[in-house]
Amino acid sequence: MVVTRKIQVETKGHTDIVPLTEQVVEVLKESGLSSGILCLFLPGTTAILTTTEFEPGLVKDIKDFWERIAPVTQFYEHNARWQDGNGYAHVRAQVSGPSLVVPFVEGKLLLGTWQDIVLVDFDNRPRLRTIVVQIVGE
Image (cartoon, rainbow, N blue to C red; front, side, top):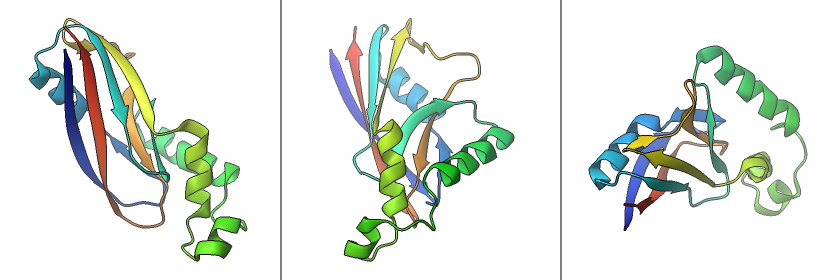
């Protein structure tokens, strides 16, 4: 069986890291499926889905990491062409990508003890993000 749902979250942009695990667990519970795989997909090119330990120190470390990898102040051809100032966000999103797959058994996601599902929004403004959740299982 395949179940498709959506989760919407408001973000602040600027490498906002938003925990999603609770919402995903609720969608899985509502699906009534016991075992299978759960796919999350984020339409867009300036945010990613990933997993991490969601704690304040690590959240700051992650934000600092992205600033070192693709600094906001660096020159980006995208900004020169479109004048929207979010070239860095597009570059950052290329490293991880817009999707994530998590297996589940007996109605429980097989995440590690400290592993949380998160959305990282790199864009330079607040956004309403929609995450497509597709669950394949029995």
